[in-house]
Amino acid sequence: MARARKPLLVVVTGPTASGKTSLAIELACCYGTEIISADSRQIFKDLPIGTAAPSPEERSRAFHHLVGILDLDGYYSAARFEEDALGILNTIFATRDIAIVCGGSMMYVDALTRGFDDMPRVSDATRNYVLSLLETQGTEAVLAQLEIVDPAYFAEVDRANTRRVVHALEISLEAGVPYSTLRKGQRRERPFRTLKLAVDWPREELFDRINRRVDAMIADGLEEEARRAFAVGDFNSLNTVGYKEMKAYFNGTMDFDTAVARIAKNTRVYAKKQLTWLRRDSEIHWLNPTSALAEACSLIDRELAEE
Image (cartoon, rainbow, N blue to C red):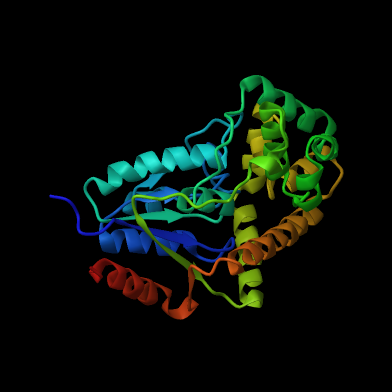
């Protein structure tokens, strides 16, 4: 017998350190469902501290998909996430009316809820070329080539977002036309409804949470985790806040205390960028930190009750 309504996808998003994981787990327990991680770094193995991945105890409370499954030298993208997450949702929705996605990688969330424009699949040859360019000559070299092949996108891209710059150059080279000409921005039909939630912390409180999280990461062994990771290789998966600063410390270009302070500062900058993106999304329901779970359950129950 067909369902009267589409199943419900609850997206728990928000800036880093806003409490996404704990809220998603409580909701998964309340509604007897599973969580798909929408975090572009938690998907990699052996980085649980620096990526604030859910702990074994948290994962025992609610099953998490796409956490710690990819080797450090592996390649992943928002397009692959869209494909993988849709497949997982098909399985979850076969037996449940609700599923949860949790993460602050905004392109991943948008890819799943809105869909990506049709883009060519990037070949290994193109991917390896761009990654080699990045690793040997840095982001500026990738930007220089992007400016040549797609000056329109070069003019608007966040040049500090290495993954986005790399993706645009990969697509431009693979397609033989500028990446910007392939972006139509048309929303795709999905076989589920979407409810987006985020906890609305005052900025100073959010920044304090970030500072305390960084201190906890250091206490939990971020330095040792980073040393083990870089011993395997200097991969693009480590080109992110926390590991970049540790690398500078290991290389002697930054002392330990400066590296830790820079991790906190760069995480706050990243949170600001996340908030800028999120505030543009009128679909997000912003939750009071003191009553987030109750408010989330009320919104979910209302969605599930509607015919």
